[in-house]
Length: 107
Image (cartoon, rainbow, N blue to C red; front, side, top):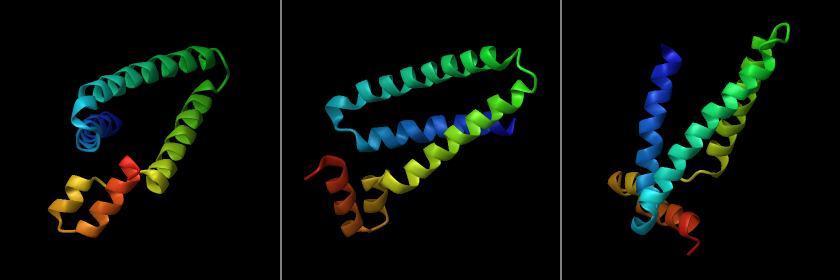
């Protein structure tokens, strides 16, 4: 239940973040690619489960693999993902908004 809730919250948050970050002409495409990547992730998870299904203690490998990938994703998000410029503007953090926009659009 907890994991299902976390997945649903992240599914909402990532689409909102992509919507704020993407240029208007690319928004639909970027969100569609995001949904395709989620489906690909389900397929890869299924293949890993099938691979480790017959292995003694295979659930440990499945759990470990997902844990390592989640940790890698977390580290990359913390170190390289900018704050949302829209959120920064709403909080009155204009200088940080400008820095985030420069990081996103390379200007």
